[in-house]
Image 1 (cartoon, rainbow, N blue to C red):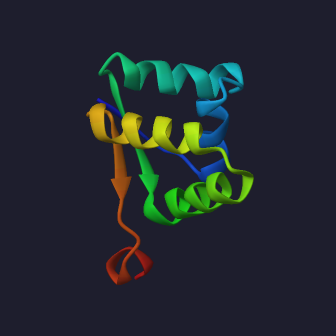
Image 2 (cartoon, rainbow, N blue to C red):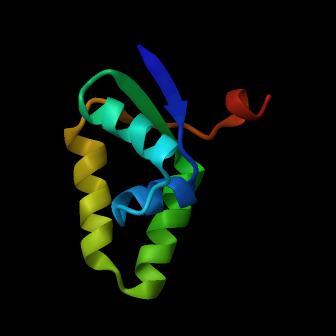
Image 3 (cartoon, rainbow, N blue to C red):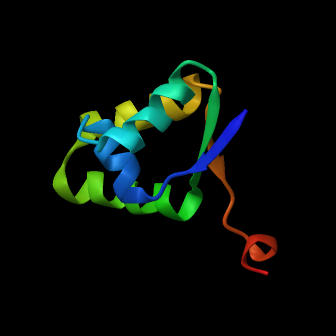
Length: 84
């Protein structure tokens, strides 16, 4: 199974359906259960801050739903082991 790591901008573009073709392919693979996409928690925090500041509550709900209901999208912890 393929594994990808998304940054905040990539995941934001995914939520707005504005990804370039190659990136979109990776997310479609994840939607089909053929790949896993990790979203680092620091990137998720950036997105939640952006959603709050822009008052995009619907995108915040959409992101939470995607992350909670899709087994192919997983948070990746930002901790001292990762930093090391």
